[in-house]
Image 1 (cartoon, one colour):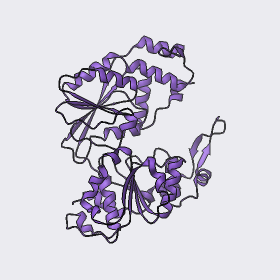
Image 2: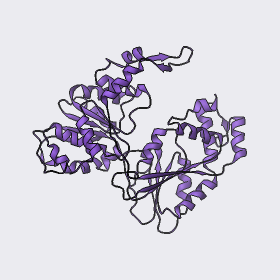
Image 3: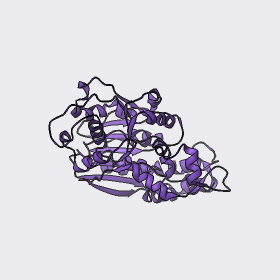
Image 4: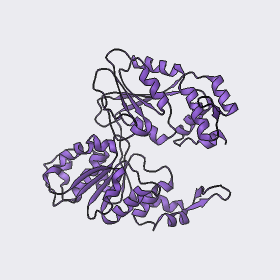
Length: 398
């Protein structure tokens, strides 16, 4: 086995309680397992092409990942070089949904994949208990959008006693807000130092080149204006009472225009293996009904179906953002179409990474972003270009 230089450097810098921060496709899984291997008596020579050296009574290994990675046995493939099945210790790969099953485990090694420890729910409580009695590391391509995302990891590392202490030390709340709203963070120098202590960056230089192209399609302007003016949902035939309802109706008006589907079929003529990301079920209904040609396989990954990537000569893979932005890879195509924009830069970035992998045979990767010149699409694009999440309330002015 031969780690790349940046992976080897990351292994040397890692410690329990760290976040391994590597872009999508950078090989975080192999790097994390290499660290586990060394921590349990393995040899660095093996990581640089030498012979395998057996570990000394390795600790039980628990890998908490996405349901999709668990079900597709992706981690089992990464474990093969380390001859894990030759030992008598326990190896468990399970999803975040089941993390509470392991909250009483002690003296083991945990790899938390695709970082989910944000907020203060049941997952975070289980994580904090596990972190207290085990060695652990976190893997993430996008470790945190705001300082509050780091609270559980900071607490697990002993920087703060709990969330309350963090808020008391660093959060300033808006005085006149109807609900608790953080206006700004203070003592950020301390936060930056703490983040540097736990964040292990993988200095990953891609060999691929991403080509992003905005494809502007038509939309029904009179309908769009009517919804904006009357605040009326023409599909439900009822008044729109909040920002979410207005944005949903406006997006349905622009996303269902036939020019969008026509443009997709035009692209498919020159890209015969294509992943299409979409947001809503009404988009899926449109995409399902399109005629892509003879012998074209159409498969889906969403809340309704969990089908694998097709292996035919010509195929279309329809993926819903929330269900499929992470936890799977595809190296048999160089093309992704974003049929509509997602609100989250993080999700868009993760979705793009599904084809940008270390072992892809392609150098040039093509990304097509479908959008319109409507007010809401331009506002979403502005937020994404700033690497921020689109705010419905600010746009709708409810």
